[in-house]
Length: 362
Ligand code: MRU
Image (tube, rainbow, N blue to C red; front, side, top):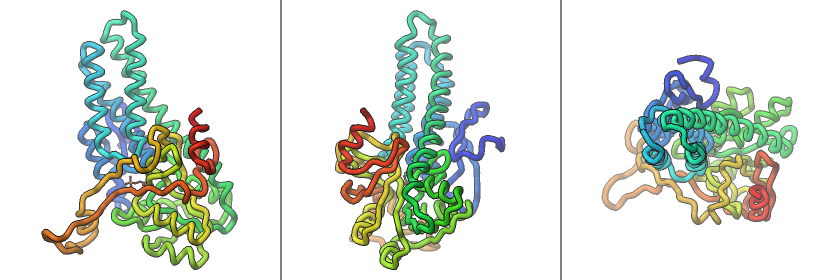
């Protein structure tokens, strides 16, 4: 694998027709860089969480759609668009909750339609080459904008951190969930870079352990003091006065500020309110969805029961049988009134969020 394309969580290897990712299911034990070539490989990688985190799956899907359409043999605009829509819908069906996935794919579709609709009499093979080039640039722009948005979230978020702060985070909204920097972790990296002493407490994040396997790994590797705690220890940390503020990521923010994020996030927000600790959601613009009025309309992904009962154990750690079932939603929704602020690339939004979010998109 060429070394120069590895540092980002998601990268495009145009020469090899591959989307390059770090297989996150193997971290932290093994750093395995893999190339995804087909629609099914990308679908499976997103579904299995080899690539995960709202912004990262959007970027990966954008690269993938470009590579798939690069090899289109469609001979007229309508069959080209039909093929693009089929591939787009297939990739989009891999995970429902993070809006970044559909957002990136819609943006790619719009880009292709724009060129085709304004083509005039251009013959189709010339036009197809032009669309391919535009899709390549669009997918790279989605990647570059993600990097820039996370950097800016860091700039705004770091203003909330005081020297010596104890910060709690849930799941992984780190660089592994984006292209670089992360969202919730961007202010932490920046504080550390500026010589501030911070201590980050990572919720383990049952059942898939993104906090333990990914956040604790990436922050401690960067030299940031990191403590891992099981999810049910967060209250004890807060009561002990060790948490000054909370940064979490999100998968979709509704127009009223309700925010879907990894299962367990809403519980952290409720605890934070009880203990009077500020709770911030970090969101790139691409994760804010003004078309979804409230959290009630956000589709929550339900995952395989095995993740709870079997995945990390040598033998099954739960009963089985007809009177037994498992509840395994991947995300929950934190009500907007539990959120102190939403840290975006454009600044920190404060309640009332319906107005602040409407203003952001005006
Ligand atoms: O199921 P995952 O691991 O993809 O869930 C990820 C999260 O919930 C993240 O907090 C969210 O996507 C924000 S990433 C910047």
